[in-house]
Image (cartoon, rainbow, N blue to C red):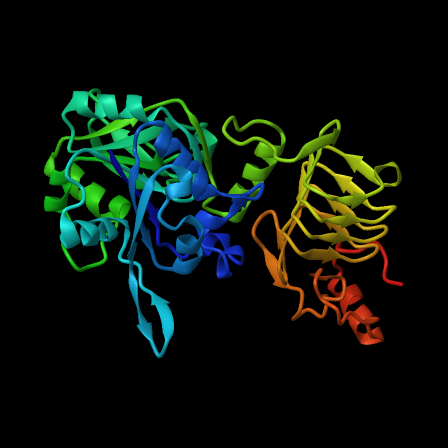
Length: 392
């Protein structure tokens, strides 16, 4: 069976991570989120998978290649162009990307599944496919109920008594929401769907195709299902996803490495004297990371591979990407450190280099670290940052 993963978006709501990593490649404990989707598709017999790519396309293609090592066949549809030797992404919208593939060589010749490349899902796709066919639908949307106070974060789906979709509400207020059932970004289509999608133009599944289907009275149904779904569309979502995985709340994601003490997992060759480190799980520490005596690690926290956590530093409910050096005395509380950026769990972030704080947090591979100037120390104090406990 055939499927499509939507992977062409810029991921603006997950910046600054997506400045250098496309959303489908964002790691969940060192494993890209799209890899979990491929495992799910393979489990349910979907082994021929198209992926549309645009923003940082080469990152996705170079990792997954033809899909052979993941037990599926993969091919890519690039949306963009090259100008003056530079690759320029130009996404066509989710439905436009589907149409581009179909216009190229009628790939979708039977019922097919479309997944967004930025969510962890544990769904019985076989059962969803069965319900889609029983309805005689041209298009089906897998939906999920959420608490009423969360509806304003999602696209709300309104159906009649038979499950036929009549309308949508995009992130309505709690008082205006007509339903507590949301769009999960999991779609099942028949090839006839392409009669409703124009060629060569940007066209979106959610905002263009679905309202068109609902208005025309097409056999377009919701498939309500109770399943595990962790969206990482925004920084707070990613934050919660990592916390859920470390807490053991996500079935399909195990914590890698060895459990060296209760709730503390490490990769290979971590340099740490755990008797002299204050640690409270759940914590994951990647391989070849060094943690100096006197550091404090409080979970749920993830520290990537090849990091360096210096003496007296604190990593508390935080996510540290690979090759990060956290300086002596620095306090990270509910922060995400990614390259030159420090990000709060609500998505607010600042550039450590521009703020003259890259002497506190920097790349662990740097060899040019020097004692900060009095001006740099003063800048840190003026910012009132909680990154450090003291500046000596």
